[in-house]
Length: 310
Image: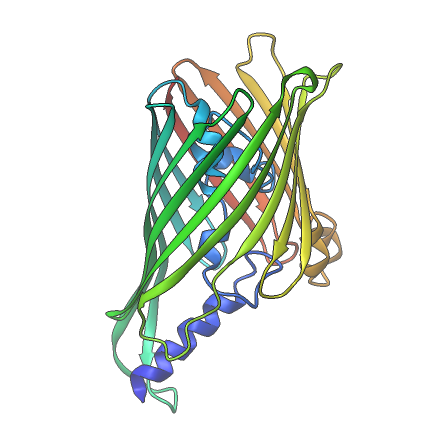
């Protein structure tokens, strides 16, 4: 009973973290981007291509990986949660492959019994997963892709292990400099769990669009998200300005309809709820990106990514 009490507290803590408006669902870390470029655009990224980070949105975009890349991301999240991503991508056969390792550290918690009395040493909690994805062209302007994630949660030596999979498709319209994508994201099954009733999977259908504007140095990103379990629909919009002619300085912004679910009554902070900002600097072959995302009065997250490669 004592251990069950601590497990309950940990689960409630996870549900209370305002990662997104979907706070009633589990596996929040799988939905929260770590890649600073995507964070700066509020996660509106599913129609992007040629970037290793796309594996976490729509693996079909891996088809245009042109050379080996490696990147590391670190995120300072809310309530002392920290996360790290290691990701590498390289061209293979008719497309590209990305392989990643992800780790979320939730810190330590007091081990208490049902009366709230501390009964032992503090216990730690983390979530981590391995990810692999592949994307390839099936025609001149159409690509498909798939990815898998082997996910594990550990709390005081209680472990849950799950397998998730995603599939996506993209279509490129060269005359309009526009790309559209569709992803069926993070379906799966439980391999092992310490919970009697595991949380619902973060199943989503995501439709995305990326468009380079003709008369502005701006690429717009738009994602529409349908949550399978709640039947809720949300939207995210982001943009990336190319500041210099040699394309080595970028400014980014993002907005989300989730902002209406993140109101906390703190007037000044709530004005920016659901917003994000970021920038990137490239000195080939090195690129450094920073992104921040706000959750109103709950606070902000900060992500930094260092990328090496083509």
